[in-house]
Length: 342
Ligand code: FAD
Ligand code: EPU
Image (cartoon, rainbow, N blue to C red; front, side, top):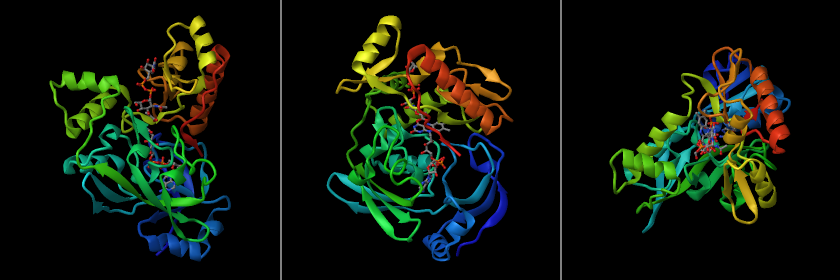
């Protein structure tokens, strides 16, 4: 049954710790909850510009009170739906916590997601920006998802090709933005895991842990250790992870830049394209560790903007614009925000 509350604080529901209000707020735990709402035209009635779907609130920056309806997705369930010789297909409800699901896979010996350990948020959000870390993206283990059309209530299946996954991107951030509620995701996982140590820091961490023949559980632990050392814990300091994407530029442009800035951190993507480390660009502009009031740039990871306590979303956004402007002035590179600003 669809029920909602009025004037609800979103403070507990976002990792940037923004103390804003939602005019209407509903917990969606069963498919009937959302289908009832669609049938009774509640989504349009309570939200002129469409509802805001909320997972773990770890990739959002609230800059104002939300005057419409927030749908907090809490459906649960993890099920191995088919097993082949080499793969297992696991269907997971959108409201499951991502990291707990990754640990479930590791415990069952199902390989493919261990490099994505400790990413905050829920399973339903993982396809939105095709979450990625330590040499793996969710698309690498993605099989399909079910999503509810917010206009008609129809449950539609999206395959890997349908999702148009890219770096921190999918069709749900572009053409279909705001149109679907992702209800479950099915992953194709390996029964005989193949370890991915492409990202150098994992090898170093495993060797520091004294592990020579790592299994997926070791990789998961190594990734957790690296992440804990590098990224601020949102429980302690408000943040939404990397605030900006790492920009992609043409090879020629990168080469010219490297003549002026020989220490430029870059990675070849092949096809005449190069990815630049936004953290390095921001640090070179002197922002690392910057703080004004309670809004700041993290002292050990310049790509992460932080709220030390009582910063407003608008202050974080102003800081983000200042960072973007200075990187553009110095390097001629435009930084695109990764975080969803509301
Ligand atoms: P939310 O913040 O709740 O929502 C994000 C977006 O998805 C919003 O636009 C929302 O409307 C939409 N949405 C959410 N659920 C649904 C749904 N069921 N259907 C349709 N739309 C939906 N990201 C990475 O990729 N790699 C990292 O390594 C990484 N590290 C991080 C580290 C920290 C400390 C933090 C705070 C964040 C990090 N992130 C990282 C970003 C974040 O964890 C991911 O983007 C995550 O997938 C967000 O999940 P969420 O449930 O919190 O989404
Ligand atoms: N760097 C600096 N200064 C900094 C930060 C980084 O010089 O303050 C340089 C370093 O040279 C470093 C390089 O940037 O070697 C890359 O840094 P890091 O390995 O920390 O990764 P990142 O590019 O900053 C990306 C993702 C993270 C993901 C990690 C690990 C993006 C936008 N960010 O960060 O994802 O966890 O790689 O794979 O792609 C997120 O999306 O929220 C996120 C945290």
